[in-house]
Image (cartoon, rainbow, N blue to C red; front, top):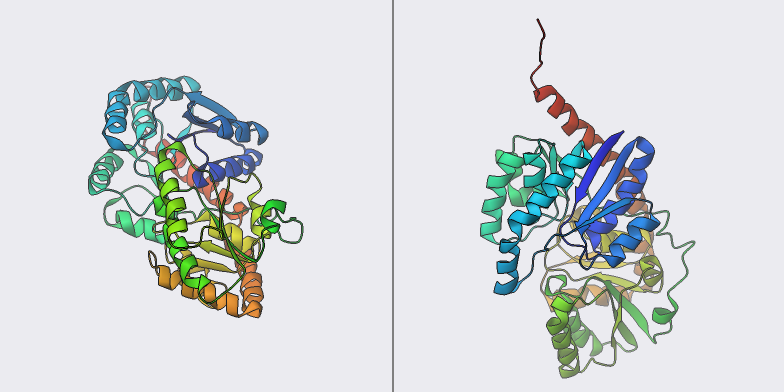
Length: 391
């Protein structure tokens, strides 16, 4: 039995947490046991999901990164105590591998694992980091990482790992459970389905990087040429993003789309929300492998996505979806308009998108690659240890 500690410094559920849970469930059958170590704060939903999936959870007193000088100060002040607690925990639990999720800015598990002399895998899933974070990452990674998982080609290129990394780099695209995200068995969400008009759905945590403000601007442009549209944003609004959310509401009213924009909050059943969509949209400014896009593809929804991360690798423009320039309301509106004008194109793109998701993005592929990565890193660790001979 291989024992993996998957460390994530933010307990609020997002794409990485869902990937951790689904992969852990499947790896258990292969003799790989996963324990998720996460902050106790703001992790009620995560703890419940882990319990439901029968994945071991270890909440720990650990400060997650915050924005603003107060948050940065508190994070710095608690850094050493947090690393110390993590170090003692991974050492006492006798883990075989420490898997650090969440990206380059979540490094406490890297230091704790390295100090405990446990192989560390650093999972990178971002393509936009402050230059100082990138510099610190490169320095720390050379010392602490036994291997890397990257969420796509653009992540690998962004960190230039092929130029300097001596440890293995394995590319694992974020997954989708195509058996669960199956339009043949999923019923539409009644709240979204009851909204009048053609439903254009975006699934994301409400924050500026998801480009929701650009979707609102696109909605304003589309309103001039189309009637009976409903723009639906599905996702949580965390306290740290309340100001942005309030600005979005004011902006929607200012540009005259307040009545056709609907923030419905988080949905536990995302597949059901997508089943109610006529068109799925990803407006992100930066992403590595947007799970919301893969989930929409699995649900055979026609997808309009900004060209972020590895989207263009899996969506052929005009054939299995539409790819548009990031941070451009005109491009986004033009892409959505193509689907509004052509219902047959919506159907054909959706059907091909689901086929691609099954063949290339399914959770079974992701879990298999995780197991391969763990075995590779563990074998390298064993090979690097000196052989003790007794005379």
